[in-house]
Amino acid sequence: MDSVDFEKLAEIELQKDEEDLEYLGPPVVSGGRKPSDVCIGHPYYDIARHGILHVVGDDNSGRKVITFSCCRLPPCHEIDHVRLLQYMKHTLDQYVENDYTLVYFHYGLNSRNKPSLGWLQSAYKEFDRKYKKNLKALYVVHPTNFIKVLWNIFKPIISHKFGKKVLYMKDLNELHEHLKFNRLIIPPEVLQHDEKLRAHKGKPSSAKSPPPRPPLPTQQFGVTLQYIRNKNNGDLIPPVMVQTISYLKQKGLRTEGLFRRSVSVHILKDVQKLYNVGKPVNFDTYDNIHIPAVILKTFLRELPEPLLTYDSYGPIQDIIGVESSLRVTRCRQIVQKLPEHNYAVLKYLLCFLHLVCQQHIHNKMTSSNLGCIFGLNLIWQREQIQSLNALVPVNLFAELLIEFYPQIFSPKSVPGEVLP
Image 1 (cartoon, rainbow, N blue to C red):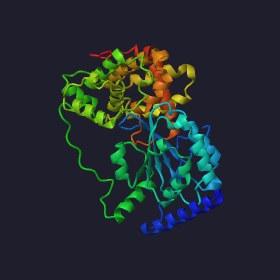
Image 2 (cartoon, helix red, strand yellow):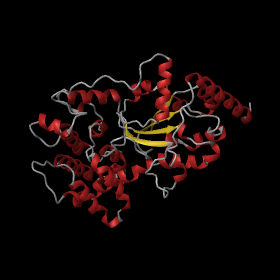
Image 3 (cartoon, rainbow, N blue to C red):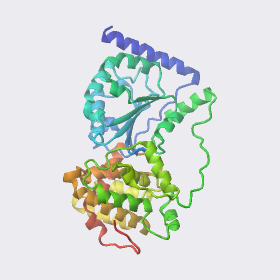
């Protein structure tokens, strides 16, 4: 069967999928909203403005999560698929040195916006070992018969190792069970489609969740800094931060790729549980320097409000428009407006990260690399929606804090402040 026949077969299956979805009612129509923070000066503005790709921080294993939403793909005549591929590579290039996860939302792919099979084949070849090596999982959400046909067509060229990374999620509940990540960006169209599917199958809404349990007195994860301080004799720095940073300072400063690697979610949950119930954690027993590194990032990510606070999000976004020579001063102004407790914890963290980047010859972790990793662990929007363009100032701000730690933090001290 030649490529033309394959293309026809795929088209037929895609049309069947569209017909099969008719029983759920009319398709959800996108409002066509464009992310307000994608400026015309973006190098891939023509693609980025559609909101097809999102980078949404780390999952609970410490991996960057990148989503691709088919419902955001415009009709083929309105988008340059060559540019789309370049934009995808441009985005992934920033993260492929770290462990990362892809989430592919299939709903919304139709005969009008489907790229050609030839484009898909070239895309798979373009994403060579550099991109596949650190990809830990590719979640395909709401797969249809078209996906099965596509898999059979491409099976001869897909490596067995890559195939094992592909996981099919029938609905969002199943995705959440695997990913367990509460800041995932899911387009409204996908959410509504999932609700229709679940209603048709008589399943409860995926939006409903049991009420949260009250935190334990020893709780470390998912509670406020003030809660931890009140339960720890007024100590400013949470014990989990003191212990992970102390351990990493002693044994991890020269570890190549520190903070780039993920760890087993089971081990991660075990360590979190120990901290939450107030039991001692001995990282030596795990013999894996990346465990305390991921625990530190997880602690920051699970704070109810980001360490840099929601109020700082706007000023941080504006840092990109500040003249280069004035950016350090602007960073100092922003952090000095933080609540004293947040300031003390941030200073403690950044003092350590500054030490890490000073060892970049050994660990390969420059301030730029660390800024890319820690940006979304320090600040995010209240609505938890983050376009790719919004990441540029977030990562830059984190990089500046790390690189120029002495200039930014030295003028202000906090009562009871502790340094790592």
